[in-house]
Amino acid sequence: MLYQMHEFGRAWMAPVTYWADAGAKMFGDHGSWLSTMPGANRLAAGYELLYRIGKDYEKPEFGIHRIDIDGTEYPVVEREVLRKPFCRLLRFKRFADDAGHIANLRDDPPVLVVAPLSGHHSTLLRDTVKTLLRDHKVYVTDWIDARMVPTSEGNFGLDDYVGYIEEFIRSIGAENLHVISVCQPTVPVLAAVSLMAARGENTPRSMVMMGGPIDTRESPTQVNDLAVDKPLWWFETNLIHNVPATYPGAGRPVYPGFLQHGGFMAMNPERHAQSHWDFYEHLLKGDLEDAASHRRFYDEYNAVLDMPAEYYLDTVRVVFKEHLLPRGLWEINGERVDPSKITGTAMLTIEGELDDISGQGQTRAAHKLCTGIADDDRQHLTVEGAGHYGIFSGRRWRQQVYPQVRDFIAGHAGTGPDSRG
Image (cartoon, rainbow, N blue to C red; front, side, top):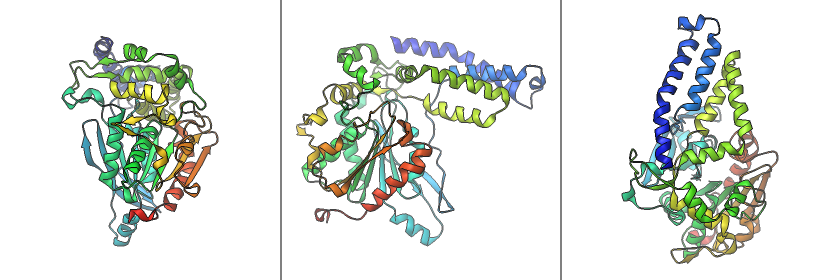
């Protein structure tokens, strides 16, 4: 019922947002005579602020069309390599005209970036992908909004997520692949590689795990505390709702994006309120660069997707309540998830010093589990002054984190145990 009420509210707000958008353009466009009226800039700024608060935020585009490599620009094309009901595997293909450059690009190691399925779209990793493209062939998981998946496609739980990762690794080719998981997918990625290793399958050359909840008993955050304090039935009763009839996934139980977004905003309400007020003042002062920066950030931050209910509840139970992975008790389709079985995959764990989502030690805990990986093949990095997003996006990611990720991957590209053949 809550989802239906939300949709009714969106429908009711639509005329208001259209009107606000029109008002912002009428009083703010230099080609409009209304922009010359006294106080027009205040009206335009107020209208745009109202428009951005009330508008719908659709999934953004990656928008990566060119990449600069050593001073040379290369065209980039986004390709769909594999489609599953709940996820698309994308490849960002670089092109070059010069034969020598083509040869160099072909020698770059392939990287699979596993984006989180935790509210925001995979485009949140745009900066991560664009930076990696300088030195790698890049694939990325693009999770599909659950409200767009018909119920005929069945359910999708955490075990299915692990199965998707296994299939993507095999599809690309594990022998030369490097996997980077950001936040939530560190758990299913570690599980997928563990299961593949236990079966004797080829595993990726390396895993780079960034800010993930491998063991949430380490330095619990506000997010972890909520999962522990509330019983599982509370999450199912209060957060799970059926998709309305207006979407292809009508009737599917989901954790709606609008509820997730409300949770994001509630974590730092003062900061978001101040950010919107600053946006209004930037518009008044004609500070177009800062205003554009605000738009870019919230176009991404406010775009959220619905998560399948089974997957969300599985994650709460397995990762945050019962800690099945670090306790060695997680079974998937009768197979025990045992990270100690991993021997031919190097591992780099990365944490932010100020991460308020995955506290310090939660990702590093993977080293306690992956006892089969040689000491020379594992590293840990704590990024000073970085929060959760700073380890994979922004200046710290590009200048401090990425060079170490690049060098770690390069150090384990083309080398591996004899069993790889």
